[in-house]
Length: 289
Image (cartoon, rainbow, N blue to C red; front, side):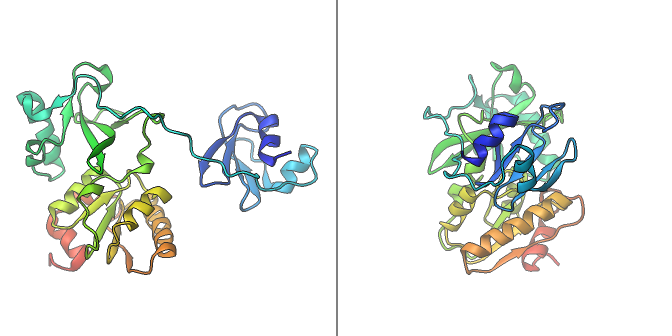
């Protein structure tokens, strides 16, 4: 029997966490149904963050009455996305058409050192027909000129800060923000975590894309490399998660291309959008000193 099927028969349906062989299952104790049992078929290890049961996979399968395990025969595919076209939330209109919303979004952008002309360019939308979008503006995500996803950002600071397009329709891990603006064989491209980091780097004069978090997926990486950048700079956030993500992205990129790749460290607990444009230029090219 497929080893994954063995675990699912015992613990319930698994969740693919990352890659092809890393899965999550409910706790073996049965006292906590959250997916806290991590199983890594590639490394041959498991660890439950609820009950503390951990060790080599042979121990886990032995406890289930099986003397061996093997990698799943078939690769696990990512969930299939809907074939329906992605659309903005119902009743979406340009922010520039509403003076009150325009002023609020302008204040949000100003707090991040971004110019309000981003609104005038018709990049952002709002809607009053969806309660989830209250006090939020919508940032569309395009690829090859088509809408592929969107993010609704709070401009009042309320949680959650961002609401994404439903995952069953579109996954942000498949796309890069601002991808369409990249030119082939650019001298450099800066990879950031967030939308506003990307906008700030572009405002400083450099081409940039955002990976919507500190994990660069294989799909995103493939799209980035399809532009053949001469040099790639990774400018993730200054916290530990950002550093870990930058290192992981660096290792991924150098495995698939021979062009220069550099991690740019920014001050602790800062994001690129917290920096002044001169500071960004100094970190990238030494132009701000």
